Length: 191
Image (cartoon, rainbow, N blue to C red):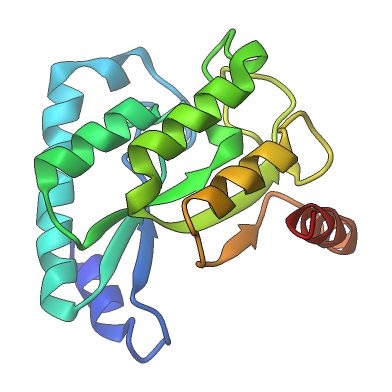
C-alpha cells in the first residue's frame, strides 16, 4: 500500500482528490481477465479487507478512492458494488461508472434494465464516469465510444438523471479515434 499512500499524499498537488482503483481478479495472467475464483467468499473477504485498508490511507490524505464494477473483477456487478459500499461505509469510497463494463453473458438484450439498476443502486456514489464501448456481453468493453453496442443515449440520460457533474473520460481508443469519439459523445450529451 506504499504506492497508494504516496499517490494519496500527492493527489492535492496533482489537482485531484480522486484515485481510481479496481477490485481485482484472481486471474494470474491478466489484470483485466475474469476468473472463476473471483466469486468465492475468500476473494470477497480479501478484497474488502484490502479496500478497507486503502480507504483508511485515502481518508488520512483527504483523498477519495473510486472503484469500477467490471464483469471480470471481484466486484462484477452494480449489486456487488453497492454491497462493497455498504460494508466499507466511508465517504472516501465512491464509484466510477462505465456502462461498457456491466454486462454479463446474455445481458445485452436487457441493456436498459442493467443500466437503470446500476444507476438506481449506485447513483448517489458515482463520482467519475467512463465513455467507451463494447462489442459483446460477458467481457469488459475495449472499443472507442460510438463504435459498439452501448446505448449512449440511455447511458447519458442516466448520468443526467442522477445530476452527475463530474468528469466523463474517454478511453480504450486509438489517437485517430479521439475526434470521432469525442464528437459522438458530445452530440449525445446535447440531445
